[in-house]
Image (cartoon, rainbow, N blue to C red; front, side, top):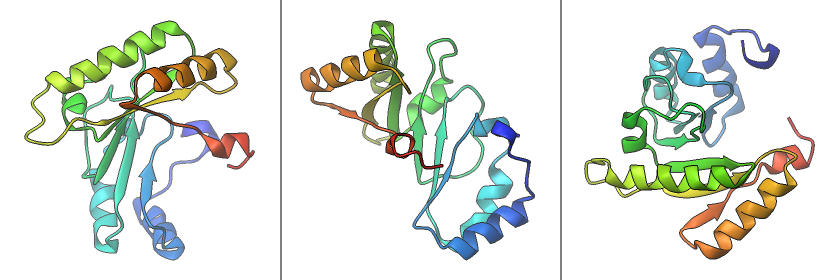
Length: 160
């Protein structure tokens, strides 16, 4: 269980999604790939709602997704397979070394066989409560226009 949330049966999760009727489902939090996501993705498929995944990429990919955001961590680089199939690369920035890591991950994505798919969207995101990270991320996107700034506005607004 991530952050005190109990594990829930796949059927209950699917029913929650069915009732909410969202535009898309994002599977995130902790490291979702520590679970086998194939049963959940298969159960969600009949709802015809796009499935998105946000992962650090340290565990093997399971499940089927229309969009994969890879958010790797410096202390545990991602599996090469995730570099090859991600649609978005998002690196959290706290200090200058994180920018070096972001650039290295972007370069690694470009060298992978992506089976004809274009490279991922590139995003930097200031670390939570990190004024240095915010300054560095903003400076980075100003000087590297291929990168976008990603913000967790729900945290700024105090939403859960």
